[in-house]
Image 1 (cartoon, rainbow, N blue to C red):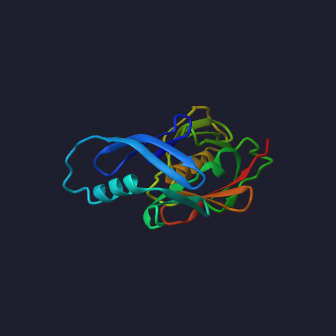
Image 2: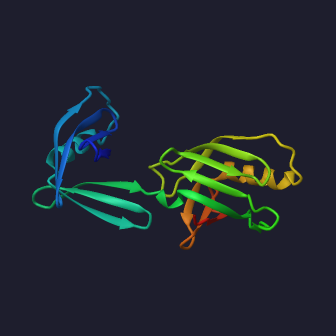
Image 3: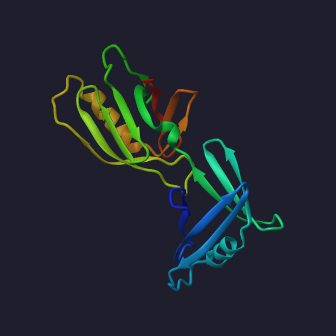
Length: 206
């Protein structure tokens, strides 16, 4: 479900049909109205009815923040919990970062001062410099997985580099990234699918 504050509209899916309508917030009161839905028949959409009922009966809500995730609880007029939705906030990774280490090996910043990466979360884009070539690609943030982040469609310029091994190791590490997490106030770890840290980033303050 997506709430568009500019238009006071919401859009979503119940696992089978798409929904949209108007919403209004007054304190902790939430009203979802003028709801319309497509009319597909999906015999395997086990949560369709429960989601529709929650949307029809929600009267109040509360938001709880746990780590980088926000949980929004829909409640009835009597305070009964109807549905809980989760938003994973990856905004902490937005911006310019220095690549501090790759696969546990600290990068010599005096030799590779341009070894940097920029994340554009709103556009789901990644841009960077291998210390020789520039690269860019797309970001995938999977809302169904905690801390999920992947980079795809990576492309680089084609200059010959004096340290080709470092560039290759960086690009392979980026392609292996499966998730991310904050590591201190101005650092981020990128990890593979087994949870092993493979790249550490330090924020460049501008």
